[in-house]
Image 1 (cartoon, one colour):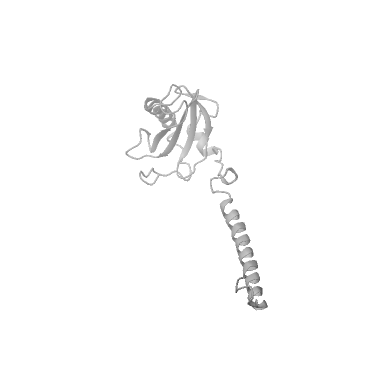
Image 2 (tube, helix red, strand yellow):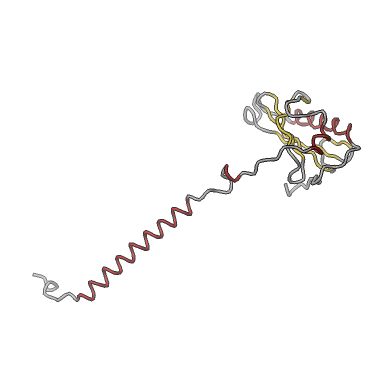
Length: 172
């Protein structure tokens, strides 16, 4: 027989062990709940927090007339015209699966197309995936930017839409 079995067990020691066990279980439970809550928070990019672009107002529409959503320019359908946001008036244009975004800003040296005080920039969108048959090309962007600049040149007498700024490479 073991000599430990003959030793009396203090109730105080047993009570401390039970208390420590209960505290540890509570700590693990609270930690687990907090960990779950933090890891399941909605991210800033979740759809419920995405800022929806505002449609173009009167000043933007006048500058682009006769262009409107649904019209065609340089073989591309205008799918959206957004109000000035982050310093740019943005058009989304598509030809089949190929999409392009046009940004109109105040003129700067690196603008691919210009009309008076305006610079017209483009960014290639999706479609077909990376240069496939449905993807937009640099030539498409250049052609569309020049066509939009031609439309802008017909309205140079109009005031600049509020909020329009120059493009700042490196910060965008």
